[in-house]
Image (cartoon, rainbow over all chains, first blue to last red; front, side, top):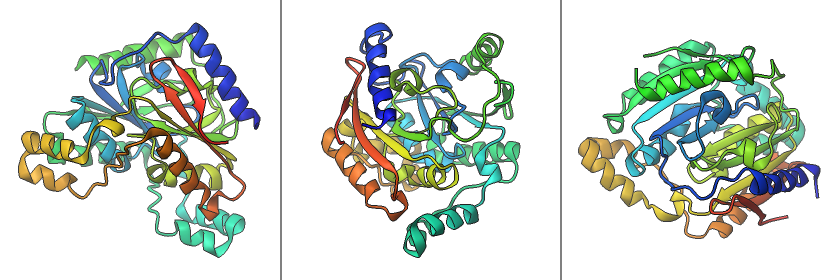
Length: 168
Length: 168
């Protein structure tokens, strides 16, 4: 068994024996959702103060609210959350990579047929961090289904651990 | 300022002053990615033993690998991660809700025009938890771009805190 899977099993065993607080209800107790990046340096519970059971956390490359939209509709319309925090971060890969970088790598790793599996993907890279936070917040606020939902935008600085408000 | 935002700022201040370990590099130190659900009862770092900076974490409603595919391509092809853990969980909303529940709620909250914003969304609900883990793992393994990537499937039990292996 690969060591990553061994680590999962061993760490989880420790969690169950010493840290699991017991069952919690499905709906988020704090009534909100966070959309953030998949980046390995982000730990939403610790960095953003989310108690276990408190909030939905949606994560993808770049913290795209467009890709998160299905999840947010479910969070808000079915589970009645009333607020979204959109938190992107400094040194994000989506500021540094282009779709062409992925295509080049895929061509090398999986050939032309592999390229066909990914060539239609919109990679959602962006050139300016704070502008992208504002754009995502505006895009979400523009949806009729967001009526009554509070949406705010933030940047997490991976060099200092600090969150900064971008939009009200 | 809403109290959720106050909590973010206050909790983050505490994190910076007492827990932030200092800057880490962008590529995941442990070389893997986790795909799991947005469910509020999931805390991947604590429950799955992920050190800060160790792994990409992709989360969406249900932990769908199809929706996570863009992020996984970036994780693997650009940032050279070599393994994926697909971890769904018991008592998942996607086992209990249907698209029709969302449409009914949207109609009530945002009218017929609101329904038009969500009616084309594939909600990715599923009837059987372990079968869905297997399906997602098989779907991902079937991609040419996954050549050389180890993919395994797991279920996290929200009643006990325990992860269980579903696929090798």
